[in-house]
Image (cartoon, rainbow, N blue to C red; front, side, top):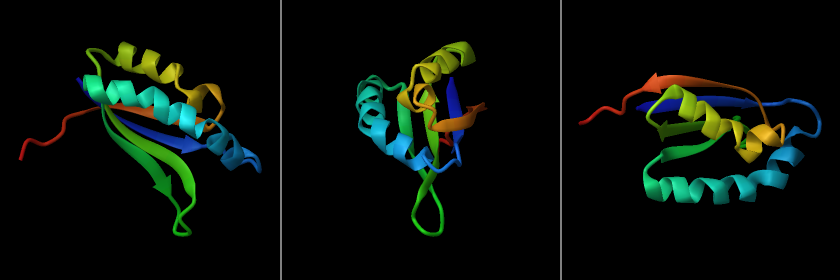
Length: 95
């Protein structure tokens, strides 16, 4: 089942520094999931000034519980980059 993840970063003065500190770890963790088909697409949400302030992902896991478990282990969650995120059942249009 596919899920849309919409995440918003913390807004404190150190939020961007925390994101940058664990960004490579976050990307390295996602790469094998991309190869296995669990991670479909994702990226940073940007302000008008091109500053990262959150993320969007589309993932594929059998259940929402597995999707949540996968997210709970993400460096952006563990590193207090994402203040909140929502996991929404989703289906990519087959066009």
